[in-house]
Length: 213
Image 1 (cartoon, rainbow, N blue to C red):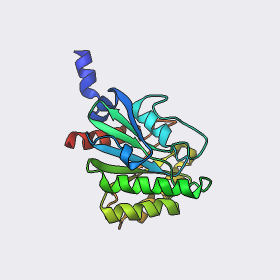
Image 2: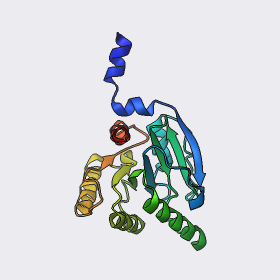
Image 3: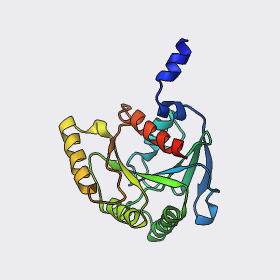
């Protein structure tokens, strides 16, 4: 009985994210994209915003996505299948000036083609460093997402690096900035891969999307 009660008490997100999660494909060009299957959720953000750390925290795995101090490490779209129910897509970091113009242009074309043409892509999570807020490259991506009507949600990362009052002020500022954006989800998830803050909330939100089919 205790085992059944424990299972019942686990959230929908915890149940999903405790299942098997595997790397299934890497796409450096549009013709390398894997066949469309389960619902996909993409993770985007400036380089070193904490995408890999967040993916690892969500899945409870230390090395699902590589964590690096070198900006621009992720150079392709990486697809991770979560038990055949949800696919997590780690996108190349944007806004890092030290990559070559040709590389930046290639990434931009790949990302734009993926975002516009992927019918099973339900939401993009735009990660924002809590210390720095939105940058020009973030707003450019949001403009494109609004234009193509692709739902996106802001996820604040590294919440543990700010005082509570500073964090609250930053969140309020971001809420004001997205209030009139048509494709923006009205809620912002505040997270820390270090402390685990917001991880279960985000798991539940993604599991709800997956359950919608």
